[in-house]
Image (tube, rainbow, N blue to C red; front, top):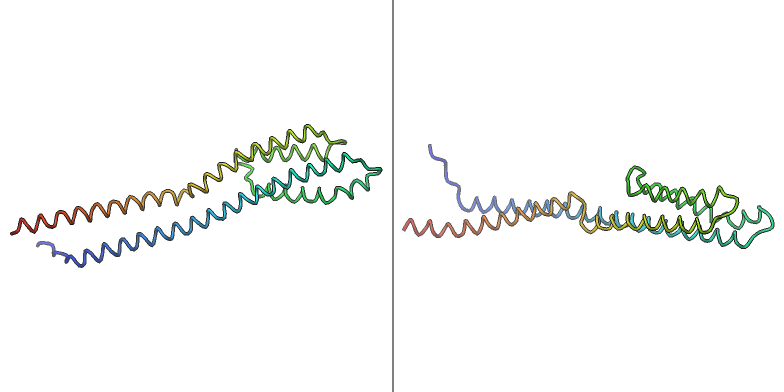
Length: 191
């Protein structure tokens, strides 16, 4: 028994529905991944801001300590706000960075080293602190550049879906052109 022929209108409707579904799916993926990229960019900006606050407060502490104070109570009162801010930003940085990622380890180690230089020593070794800050910033630049490239490229799901969607659209256009070219030849052959 031969298979029933499918009307051209049905084929067109199925093709249009398939294309519409593909475009809706691509729109959904693009919207979701765009939002993910926005969140990642906000995360990068917040990390950058916290690193800047850390370095600025460390410099402020060194500046206040250079002035010299008669007693420890006066020194503590002058430095209290700076230490509170350093505690807040270092905690925020530690919560943002994954301690198991190789790119994050040197940044976190640098923060630990800076804290030890500033808190545990009787006097602050200014050159060592500055060297530590430069080290933190150098590692942070590398890390942030990698994250920025990830934002520009898009999340892996978006990247793969983009190319699969493009391939499907190109394949559909090729199929439509091939079908359009073949139809007149078949019609002429029947005459």
